[in-house]
Length: 139
Image 1 (tube, rainbow, N blue to C red):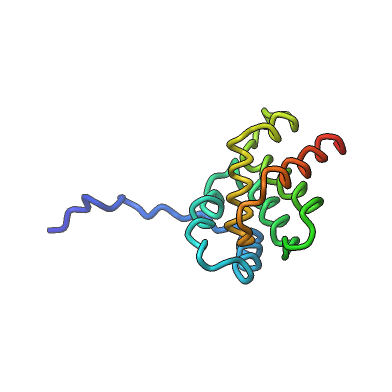
Image 2 (cartoon, helix red, strand yellow):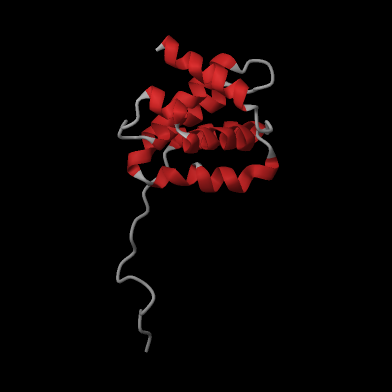
């Protein structure tokens, strides 16, 4: 006699994965550094299962997929990506833009994002600070 101890009484249907997120993941993975696949999966792609993070994740992945290279332009691309990252990590919009720019943890996550998705070594604090401070004045 079999006792279903470790299995549920009925199969729980899985939620279908959002096709748009999968599309952006494929685009990004085709040109991102291979050595950071696990980091991208654990720190970003894994959030697609949580409903509160789906929309901000989609926006972040779309922004990342639109900017294929980070070598030439650090200004405008930095601001767009930082705003998308802020919306992703602050879905309830509790931080003001000035607080987000000053937040060391968010800045660290931004540096990690540049490394994981673009293979760009940590930019200097002056580079990031200058472009993000411009963000405050433009908004």
